[in-house]
Image 1: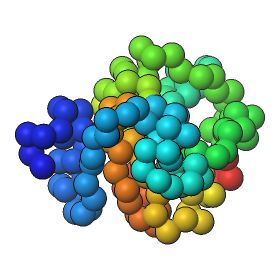
Image 2 (image 1 turned 180 degrees about the horizontal axis):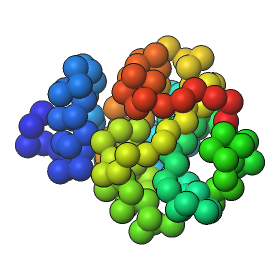
Image 3 (image 1 turned 120 degrees about the horizontal axis):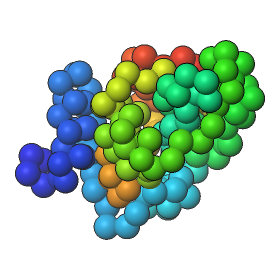
Image 4 (image 1 turned 60 degrees about the vertical axis):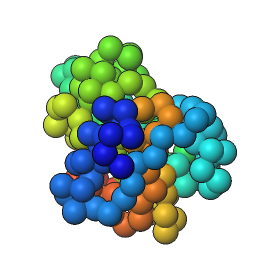
Length: 158
């Protein structure tokens, strides 16, 4: 597929291949910016969408990645307990600086900074899930069991 993807999506495709994952990033004609949009575009349930959400530690300013099931909301108090400080939603500039990607296209891997990652345990109930592929209209399907190896994320109730 080289040459057919945008540069951000190609970066994720190349990274997946270099890590030994046989998954294919695809770019769709419609946006996959929200979990509902993504589920409608690929024909899966909203719960099978792995939405990558960036938060910021209120004291340290460090980025935190939550990979949540598209049907779930993040319990910010619970995440604060996990990391030992309150968190806040990150703005678009912070997200791009930490990850190299725009909100709505943040993939679960390939970020500019090393980011502590939490994976919603509900995602692992599915055999296959879909994640953003680097742009608001690119995705890739993966086996849920590979998400933890791919991201070094901590599985937790979100």
